[in-house]
Image (cartoon, rainbow, N blue to C red; front, top):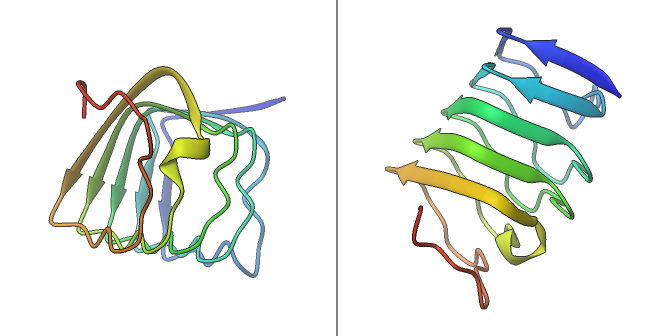
Length: 109
């Protein structure tokens, strides 16, 4: 598994150029598009997403540990399919229409 540490991804369209499977730690995604992408089994640790579009992204078994979403578009994202171990997510000024959190423990959100 590939490891990415302290990298910034700015204005990348991951629907055209797939995000490499691996572990991302202390990275920053700015103005990126993940719309309709498959992010299965990727680990995000201490990550910030600013002004990103993750609409309808497949996040099956994705680990979100200490992840901040700022002004992101998260339409139809099924958070109930992500890895719940260590799940810590925060949202600020995000569009979460049709996102699913069915039976999730969101005490840390």
